[in-house]
Length: 601
Image (cartoon, rainbow, N blue to C red; front, side, top):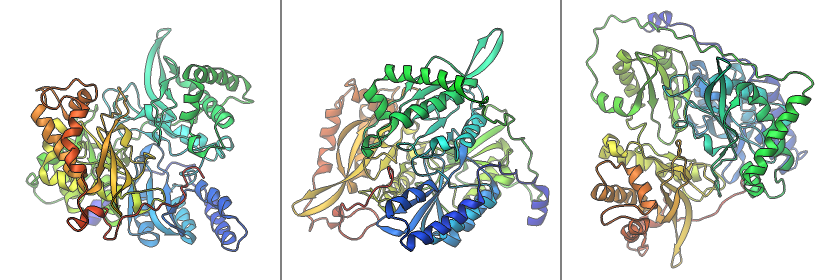
């Protein structure tokens, strides 16, 4: 049956050319040897390593995390299979999908990084500039091309932008990392929270429809976060590259290279003032356009992937609708603008997936996706598009067999959690494990089925640097430490009221919650919401009203909410509750030791 199935399926799409460079793997291997022999100092080698996508692992110089770029989030079945092989051979037998559409392999021996680079090149992938002070992975909403609210599919523009800036000399030594987000509409892409965010739009010009973008500049999350500003009313698509180059040139020229804690572009925009920065960009764009020695264009393949009909040959009678399918389909699927097709969101636990699951995912993608590829998402998940509606029960059964059929993908029951102390040098808490604990508890309680909670989000970072995007969550947390008597315990600063849709708002810091009281605190907030909400309220809208002081009932302000949660913040004596003083996933005592960060190396 399997051989007949393989014969019936169309061939895999061919990987896009241009991402991989075989010579980089050889160069990396040679440089590691020279570093081991003392010919490179640690700082110089760190910069080289990061430029090639190898990030340092927690408290050690012998291991690395390899971050694989997935431009626009497009990933092919054979690429998923290659990552599975590499994870088993050189990593820990699993991979991690990040919030920036990358795939990460953790705890790789430094000498094996070059082998991973070679393997990636075989399937057209690269880790180049996935870290370091360069243009990072260019993101694109996984709903681009299938969203009913979009003006046009931005995916070709995202891919062309990624191709233009990869290995481009103009962005190899920026003051700090630089991020592009393309999206379908403002609801789905977090475009106001990156250096350059782009929303496709059109306008009538001389009787014809002209493509262009809303361009947002200077946003970003971190120890201090800012919401981006719209550059102009309409940026024609022929000005997209000139605008991007202008912004990068200004950042390269004026960015703060001395103060590493404040050298992201959002600080430059804030300190200069938006109007001055805006005028500078528009002037610089005119200079770039007029001084290019040749016409500079984005090389775009504007044709969408061909939509195919995968043929599945079987002699078996159609199976009954699997148990749990209705719950899963409500929270993990979305109708496309193309009639008869659905987009399927595959829930992972804090982005983690095993090698075996990667292979299963590749097979499912071949069999059920009309475009023969998957997309990585903004929520540490994987998205399969162009699934025929009648195939949803079958794909659910296949996902169930692989342990990939958890419900709640599009609800607050699937939190985002950065890697935390599992691998990051800067982390103070195990945000990664906490996200998993919340997900398991909420699914057990069936909270994914509560429509009033569906549009809310929970995001968790292990430190203030916002890798878990806590600042734009309905309920966000970032890690730290506290002390009761002579004993330390992990805590989280909780913020509420953040959102990342068309009305992007940063969350308001509320109070510090001990790590082992985070789940009770969220459940208490939900309980208070149910007791005090108006009929039209969702949890998201209710919390927003509390932040504005416009609530109803006994809990009508943020201060009232804090008073209700205050008992959860009291630390017990260590002999009464020793578990309180331990972080998730750690049986030893808590400490707040950190290593040297590499985000600004």
